[in-house]
Amino acid sequence: MTARVSFGERARAVAAAVGWILLFAAAGLTATVLLGWSVGWATGMEWRWDGPSGSWAMVSGGAVTVAGLGLATWLVGHRWNGKSWTSLGWGAPRRWGARLAVGVGLGGVMAALAVTLAVVASGARVGPDGAGEPAGH
Figure 1 (spheres, rainbow, N blue to C red):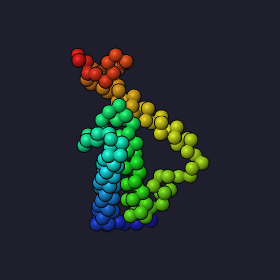
Figure 2 (figure 1 turned 135 degrees about the vertical axis):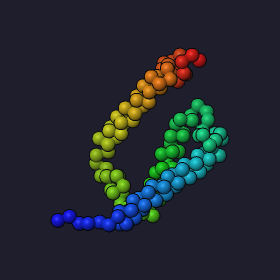
Figure 3 (figure 1 turned 180 degrees about the vertical axis):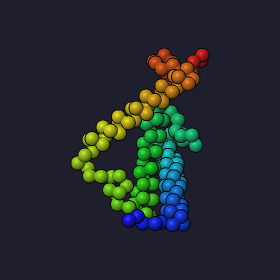
Figure 4 (figure 1 turned 120 degrees about the horizontal axis):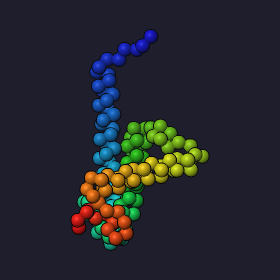
């Protein structure tokens, strides 16, 4: 026997999920920007709306983004929504090596796809003499 769920109940569930997603996005963006400005103030690096500048821009920008989204996960998912760490995807630490390997592998696949699309779509050249430059420049 199947249970019947009214349209209103499903619509409320979807609206609640969308609300939590929007709240997480707002908290993550706010935390990332505030952390970026704080790091910029503390280190003397220039931080703009489009991210940090300088030779360490990618490293510092990535670290600040991970910290900001981690803070948003803790605040919105764990504190406000009351979810356990396991239900948020933070499982048992005994398998961290396998999870890290999967994450690095998936990140590598996405990076390779991005470079391939840049080369195919815009004719970008990849190499030590013209890394990241569009063709013809």
